[in-house]
Length: 70
Image (tube, rainbow, N blue to C red):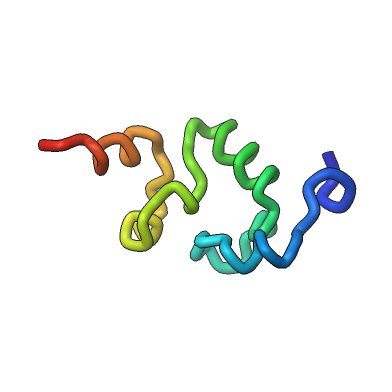
C-alpha cells in the first residue's frame, strides 16, 4: 500500500488526528497508523484520552486497565 494511492492524507483526518508525536509521518494517515500500531499490539492515539495519550503508552493492557473499574 502506498500513501498516495490507498491511504490518502485528507484534511479531515489531519484535523482530527490526536497524536502528539511530533513529526509522525503517519499523522492524518489513519490506515497506516492503525496498521503500524496493530503490528505492535498497540492502539493509536485516537483511542485514548488527551492525558492518556501524553503518556505515549499505546499498549492494549494500558487501555483496558484505564477502563476497568477498581
